[in-house]
Length: 147
Image 1 (cartoon, rainbow, N blue to C red):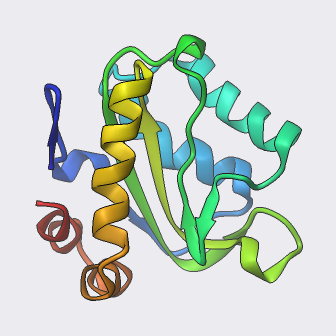
Image 2 (image 1 turned 180 degrees about the vertical axis):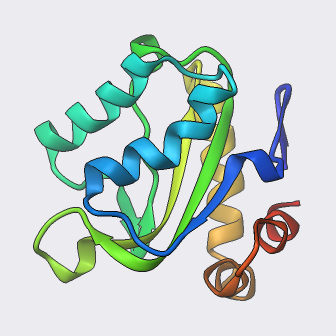
Image 3 (image 1 turned 45 degrees about the vertical axis):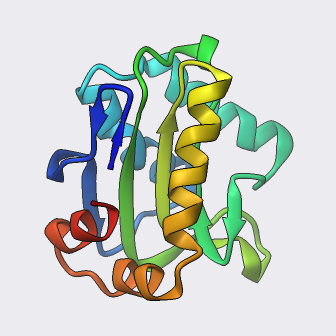
C-alpha cells in the first residue's frame, strides 16, 4: 500500500507471541515508525497519554486497534506499522477491548489521516483479507494482503 511517499514494507510489520500490557503494545507497534524517522518519541508518549485519558477508543473493532495521536505531538511523515500478536493484549478489563492486531498510524494532517483510515478500513472490512492477516505467520503474508 502506498500513501504520499510511504510504502508499506516488511520493516513496518512485526509478529509477536504476546505483549505484557497495552502500553508496551503501543510502544512496540510504533517502534518501526520511530526507527524509520516517521515519528518522534513524543508521539508515542502522546498515544499512550490519549488512551490513559480517553480510554480504549483506539480499539475500533474486535481484536483491532489503531494507535495514533495528534500530528503536532510528533508526527513527521505519513505512514503506518503493523503488530500482530498470537495472544491478545487487553486495553481494558472488557472482553471487547482485547486486541491481536495493532496498526500504528502516523498522520501529518487531517486529509492524509482520512485517506489512510479509508485504505486500512477497506482492507479490514474484507473478511477474506482480514482472516488472511489474522492467520498470517510471516510479515510477507501480511504485506501481500496490504499490497
